[in-house]
Length: 539
Image 1 (tube, rainbow, N blue to C red):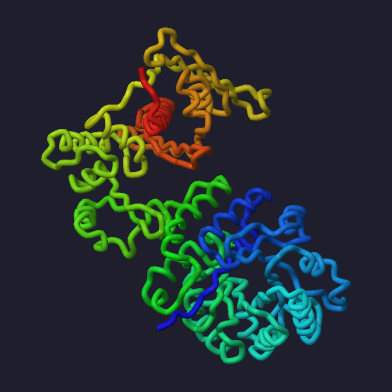
Image 2 (cartoon, rainbow, N blue to C red):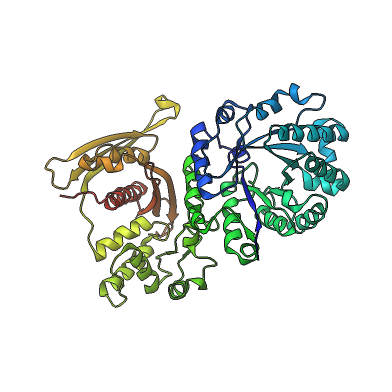
């Protein structure tokens, strides 16, 4: 039985760029396009030529894609103007795009209120604009904006817009849930009706996530007949985001209802790059990856309950709906006091450490973990600190350096930097095998920032290993372990570090009644972990 073809359309660089706080540079766009092309995306929408300098520059030449179609976005011609006399449309037509996607109102309310023109003028703009694209011998498609809202208020007009675009030569007529308020059962019913007027092989779906249904709505549209899927990597997009291709693509390939009926250009081999693609986008945006993201998140295949871990080790399918390696992710069995020997030995095996349950050292390590967690430590979110602890117990960790002393001062002065406070830290470090200690000074907007700068400013022969390491997240939790539960309570600090050269991220933990001491402990673990992973030479 032959499978029907589904076409994937990524609009991260255009629709996703409307996310609050997101601003792609030209190089950002080019880098992400290479990642999307490698993944197997059919259409990569680069942006809106003529709308801004970045997008205009991007479309001056066609990227060297392996298979993706370079797609430009724009608007249909303005009413009252000819195609040749519309600068916006002409900028798109003169771009280097393989395909052109034009947005058109398909709701009579939007035509009347937003455009202020007649329904007939809108239909004329759609027809002429599509024909203009077709005349350039490029693929034309129409995003029918507000289609589902328009259908519910005036079915005949919404269908008229779709049919006009198709009859004018549009390869794809894309039905858009622009406001994101349509529900899955409505999507299925409406798309089923539209497919009677425009063939499903020419229908696309574009959904927003305002009711947390964008992925479900997309899948229902496919069931009802749509064969092009529009969405963004990691669900990026304005308001609550767009349909998340990072969730849709593995569902299409790994769930039998879709995998048995449909084919995409994403092969099983390419699917294994999905987690990498997701994290490249996070890196470009300088954001921490969403740990709880379906399929690609660090927690997507993580468990810490002892009984779950025991079953998972025997048969992964007991608690996994798909194999994590199929999307380039990995199974994580977390170590905590709620877990047991099964959780611990699984984690030790992953690190290549002795993991025999009968080994007294392993039992002693489990006892130490539970004792430390009773003191306030938490290793399920700080695997780097756990690995250091395990290696110190079961193997060996080189003594790269030691901190002889550190001092932090905080000065309040309204003249300083306009902020009123300034912090300075002095750290004295002895490097293994070297006679003279190193004294480093760092200044920052707070004591932890100053300590971090001082510690990383001069680490002798190890400096090259940490030049690209930066602190990207810092979390503090007050644990009421003291009698008063007030300002003298135990403090837990989690520090997330990022290697800007390799893209690696790791988290470490520190605990103390002194927040600065807890922070410094986490910072020391972070640097020692990096040196360990780099196989740095110790004297």
